[in-house]
Length: 488
Image 1 (cartoon, one colour):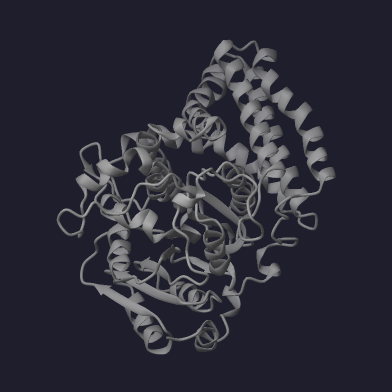
Image 2 (cartoon, rainbow, N blue to C red):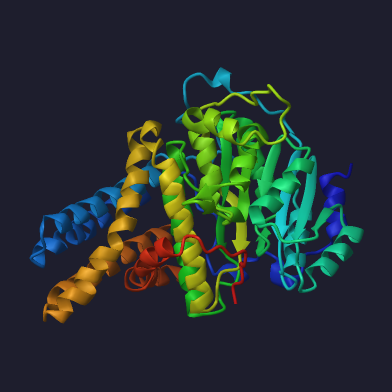
């Protein structure tokens, strides 16, 4: 077995475009402090109050009905709660023992100091970027590491690249003769995995050398954690205006939204760029994940939310899932016990993902994500209320905001102007931009040397004017499934 040092030596130096240098990520892109100074929290609270109150009051100023007032109040409550919890109670579980932990920790089996970790990757037709991804996996300083890559029927030359890398690096490569879909490909890899920890990344990502080790350390320190997510930013942030906008949005979604969920032990999406699970929290549910069906058809998307839902909800859904999808367990084997696992976010575990540079691939990606959101809503929505009041607020509040967005955009941006009512549309867009400015200010507080915060309001505007309309389309096309992850 090779040590972490020998793997780094075998990997050699990462290609220049794959190295996670600050210049390639945007000025000031450094991991935020787990607990910001008190003056920073106070500044955020003072800045939030007038802006959020104004956003909540906009429907009244525009003569809006009661439902719009309720929507404004929900925006106020959700945003205030996310920021307060993310900046006041979040602890990076790789940096310190979390302050909020459940009772009955003895029920969770402890991991050894250096558990065997299996790092799994599925790829299809990613010839241009797969070498950078694999080399960054091999360059990880995580000890006791096994790396398995599955080629899911590539036809563009990816197989040849993987064969060359397998001859040079300590990587096991599985070649599937036909395409089976990303989830089934990853399950094939999991069957060969030896690890007590299963880690996943995406084929368009590169990782900091210490990212995986930090995630594993968080699991070792906190036996109650069944899964943790790393912190993702855009690898190609400087390519276009759209990539800069996405990069600013990624920062907030991880640093604020995931940090707030992590503080209450219920990160609802352990995201694909770096998703690390305890094997005993997910192995029994991989057959259900691979064979997931929705609305009478196989749901082929590699939904991160659904696998996370199996961790968070197995106490209430686990036994039924194992009966329906027994997998390869021997007859009579009930599998591992269903435990009330928690999930967390590791801000210091950095990973960079290639985001879409043009509008059409970006919209395709967003449609896939909205389909996964809808599918997971039907699963996780049935038990998230059991995870505690704050976790329930974050989950169901987000759901209501997403579901209401198309109707509100239709009323304000189409119906109002069509009837000659332009003021409500202007005020609505002004409120959206103000909300985006506030998220941008949070970005700036975490990254004082960066100007990337200015792009965050554009994402808020894009979400309302373009992305909100994709939800009805995603609902109508749920049965369509694709593998492609192209970002160009």
